[in-house]
Amino acid sequence: MQLKIAKRSSSTKSKGATNEASPSPRVLFTVDVPDDASVDDLKKAINRKNKSLYPDRQRLTVGEAKTVLEKDVGLTKYSIGDGDVVYLKDLGPQISWRTVFYIEYLGPMVFHYLIYNFPIIFYRHAFEHSGIQRRVYMLVMGHFLKRELETGFVHRFSHGTMPLFNVFKNSFHYHILSGLNLAYWVYGPSSAKGTVLAAKLENPTLMAIFTGIFLFAELSNLSTHITLRNLRPPGTRVRRIPFGYGFDMVSCPNYLFETIAWASITLMTRSMAAVLFLVVSTAQMYVWAIKKHKQYKREFPDYPKSRKAMIPFIA
Image 1 (cartoon, rainbow, N blue to C red):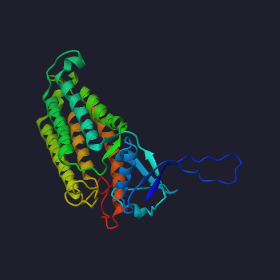
Image 2 (cartoon, rainbow, N blue to C red):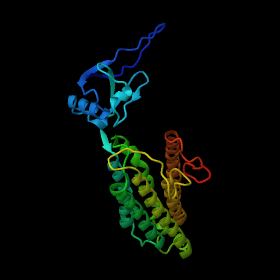
Image 3 (cartoon, helix red, strand yellow):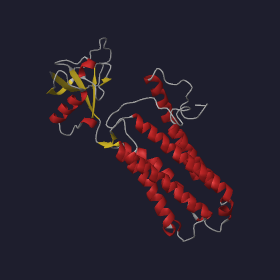
Image 4 (cartoon, helix red, strand yellow):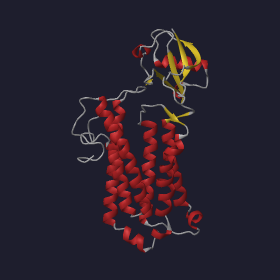
């Protein structure tokens, strides 16, 4: 069958007009696909017509309701037949989610490494780091190294790409708040070896407790990521209800455990930079958790009603 690929026109209405006519679609070109073609087949056909419009860059819709054509679905599901119009939106240059994650987590590692190891560049004089600074450096670097390894070997992404521009927006809070800002204030001379602040922070019992909480949260976070990975067969976008450690109480225990990990860093350092990152990151993860929680309940009628989004028994 032959389909018309069009661009939606902005509807305009003259002053005083009593009748609104739907604007004629602006047809860009036509493509031929088999009668039993899928949305993927249609995207490949469009790509053959325009090499710059690779499938991940395309957003296809039909009808006045602008129904989005989902990946891996047959065109017959949308009652698309010969001569019908399919609307195309160019999403712009794309970047893979995996690459985005690599960039997001690499930035903080670079900032922490440079500021910790080259204090004379950032503080204009050399000094010896305290025990608490060394401990935080190892924990933070370990955290982001773990995230890089999870990106490469654990995560399976439901969406292949995102708009290239978004990588700058997504990276800001990691690179600046948990990277540059946190490292600059935590590794500075105010809590260096021999200072009053370092002496207060280096209580062996508290350091052991906060380190233990951090490691517990990191391992728990890894466990939930592995659970989510095992729900999705490789190369698919399958979604299932997660069960097991953490998931019996909340929909997004990975966010809960990440919050606990950063709370332990905040308590260990008593730094306002750590407080700022904890507040911003927790608020952002809570927004994501609410969205995912609602999606689970909408998608699965038998979804456990006792679960909260991110915070057990509360929200």
